[in-house]
Image (cartoon, rainbow over all chains, first blue to last red; front, side, top):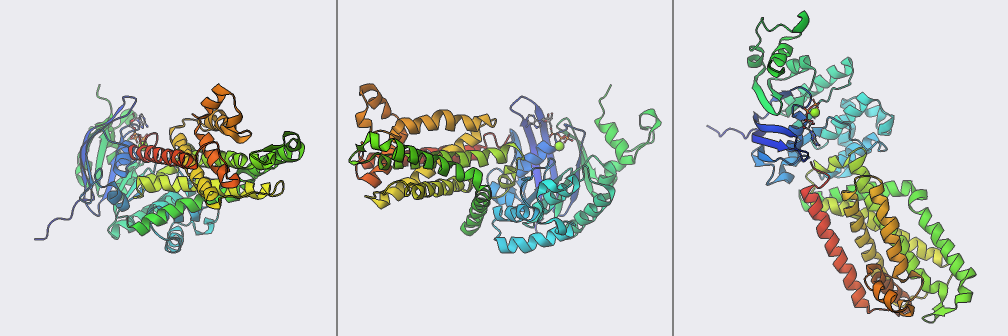
Length: 258
Length: 258
Ligand SMILES: Nc1ncnc2c1ncn2[C@@H]1O[C@H](COP(=O)(O)OP(=O)(O)OP(=O)(O)O)[C@@H](O)[C@H]1O
Ligand SMILES: [Mg+2]
């Protein structure tokens, strides 16, 4: 039998204490297989962005290990970073830059020559409905369009592992659906996706696997079916309101115990 | 990354900065040219005849090298401190590069190259302007070029360090105003240190810019207050020191990675 391919992401015992003393991650372990569509859910401040920051190399961990496609992210960061595309939670675009320049320059940082990056960028921008806006300055775009620019930027080097931190925050329904189609299309091509979102129905629709993180610890991790199976009818939401199954499992696992 | 990919990443950073500085040339190139022209006018046409000759040349010719260095030092420094600070502080678009496989030393080189280009360009422009006010004497053209390049490099690196440390916009304005400008003025732009009385003459020798101005002036006049190799040594030592600090800062990610 051929050996199993290395997982896209393997983290173990991950810890992060920020300089101010906040303990954001408290021994997180998680594996994402190649080609998975993985949703990382959790309330505000649970540690999702911190976790992603460590994976992509924007946050220094204080304990544990991160391995990406079998390579240790600390020992060979230049190798692991080449595989990852990041769509960050907060818009971090150069506001004066033109859409096409931002995407093409990003290709440059990955070593892609301008001529190749330009045609690739145009193709990606077409796929994301931004082609008409390619010569516009980012500051003149709407919030949802800026998010799409960040997705285009993350895709320019054809990453095998796409990490999206709340890519659909503030994005209208129609656009969100087209983003879903786009992301699903990527997984069909073998791209591994890690997504965080506060729209639980979105996670339920898209993700094959899901983990819920709360206060820096993983409280559940499994296939979508396994997690949904934790739902029981007695756990109806407060005040009689009932959300989706995933929403109720989420609330049950993350609310403060009395 | 292959060496060629590193080159593309470097070129992308440099290209972006050169496009930026030429687009806003009234802010980047014009001010130094205008102030230098004023100085030449005052010291050449208005005061020069009263002061007479220094080192056997008209006074305006004596001040040209120092005034060129003033422009080079401040422009190289402010270019890099500004681009570094802006990209980490406002939009945080420096994350674009930090998540890429571009190694630390290429990131430093990319930022510093912008300041280097700006310093050399400004120095050359001010020299061209000086031609309208004096017959430029050139004794050692290679020394002139060497000092133009090394000085731009040193202060671009210093600006990089400042930009990384700065926590607010004031943090990048304080040094040019309260440190660089005094160091340049007291480093003998307007007088020969030989003419200074005891204590001041000795203090001047602790000012690195003194050695730089004298070395640069040697290229024009063929005379200097200090041996030329001492001046070169000071510049090379500073370049090595600031390069080491810069690469260290990016590697540990001070102020850039949490
Ligand atoms: N740069 C920082 N310095 C200090 N503490 C931080 C920093 N970034 C995050 N934290 C803290 O770490 C904890 C986890 O934050 P994180 O941003 O990872 O949460 P999150 O799950 O992404 O939340 P959200 O859903 O609101 O985006 C919080 O308590 C937060 O205050
Ligand atoms: Mg977050």
